[in-house]
Length: 255
Image (cartoon, rainbow, N blue to C red):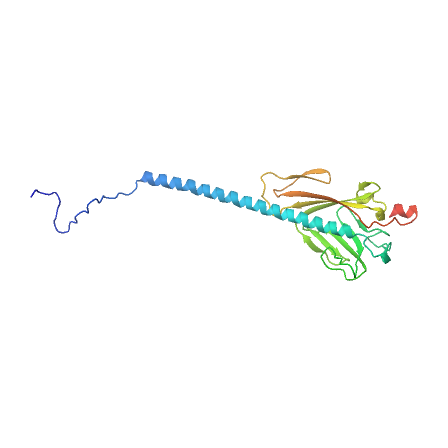
């Protein structure tokens, strides 16, 4: 038998057939692997941040659209009820501290007052959704609160918040064939329509890289922050306009 190079001395393990000696990775291979892993990780992080930003943007847009739809719906319903009265109540809107005789709307350029009768027979709701069980006159006031949200007050009670995304509300009144500011309305009983512009803003800041610009009340405004802004405009004709009260021209000019 020929001699063999394999050592069969005690304590020496015979190598298995086909077994290869394993080696560790080199430092250069380790550094390349770490660099590739970091590139992949940074890509995943950038993708996650972009997805989160897009999610915030879409969520805020949806909230703004819902706010605009809800507030315009409430205001439209209130104005369509303005002057509502049963046949036996016709032409019985007396003068008060906020309303001229016969007037069914009043206010200024950012506050709207509306009045109408309730009904025991027909379901009539106020701006807060409460049903009017009494046939007495109901007065509602729509105005902005200190936090730039829209409030509703019924019959002089404490205001209740309706929406927190409304930044501004601009009102114009249609009388004598054209739209006027509140200071130019001489006879409130002759107002035949109300135009409303609502500026709705997102609650979160930092949604856009460049400050938004919008047109409200005929002026272009650039925001001082990086929130989203949308303007909702509507004009509502008053369905229940009463005939102007027969008062002396002197009182009419001073009302």
